[in-house]
Length: 169
Length: 358
Image (cartoon, rainbow over all chains, first blue to last red):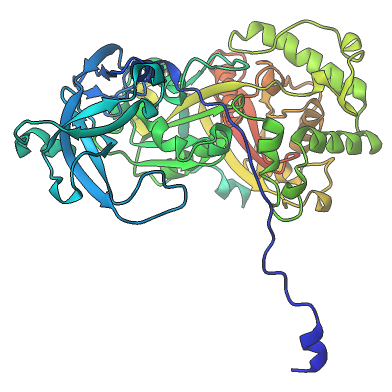
């Protein structure tokens, strides 16, 4: 390779083109009901008129039957941990001290589990089937957002039978 | 050779439905927008989701600002037991093309195609500039109206059109839209009056621009026995093709559309006369370019539905052209029709679908 060649500028290997877009979010009729429920400190779901399953949150349809879910259902504040993981890895934007427990929770009366933070229990004591309840922020802090739920914590009940939640793992 | 590229297996447009086109639907989420459309497109012919063998949709996450919106949209159909499904990040007209290709293979007899787009959730000019070359064009954020205006200017300078022609197309489209209950913009304002508008981007005045529209549409395709079961007089797809040109705007003659011409040739458009054309030309001047590229003479009515100047739901406006052309045949107003769909800046990619009744 000649000296001239090494003096020439090399290929451009990086080009930064920052992009940012702002969007409105339209939750729709069904999700608005769920969000308004959170604002009141309760879980609101919807039932499928065909298969009878209760979805929380509902997006307005039964994903199995493709029909509108029109019947509103208020769910219990307690549920069952169907599965979980313990987060030990730090990452950018992390707002919770590690280690912490991320659990799939099936509220009593629901047929769809959703993800929640589990606290007030050592990470080595969490288990599938554990019964938990939602802890809400102070009433004046409630908003139409999942931020209204501080976290879930264990309740003093026997673990749920595996048969009751095996469909929701 | 072109005949071989035309449809080997007859496929029919068995049913068509579209949402009421609106400037902004801030009441429903995407699933709630689609559910009534899906229910109508099945209900028209008395079938259910279990009667179609394949589902294909067209949409883009860029409009919604959320990932995998097409997966969540499937909740509007219901996909249990698990279904064979696909998606294109394009107008639903291309989803229809994919389903048509699959039907050509003969393994299945019916498909649901749907599309949805919410143009109202972000700044459309910014969003659409992200479909451009990411290194040399997109970083400058050229807005879609300005790019269309470059094309309109080139058309005028080439002596192919005048601003009065743009106004005449806009006036005709929105007057025709008065008879389309699903249209968003319908009125009867003379072209001379429209020419008094201010420019948005010269030489385009407001009337030459498409409205910003939220919408959704669906079509059921059927072949074999199902085509006959679901319609006494099926509307057949007799030719179908799509072609693309370079992404480099500077390398194209923006006053012509060779990709449209090629697609029309492969689809066999010139094999006979057409009674109606549904053209997906979002900007008024683009209708002039596509009409010429398709080789249509002045006697062929264009966009009796009002076309995209009356409602331009992104990702659905092309699919709606095919649905409207099929509706013209079904109603007996036309025997043979052509539908066109476009994608990309300044008519970069074009699709031509030829339809015939019996």
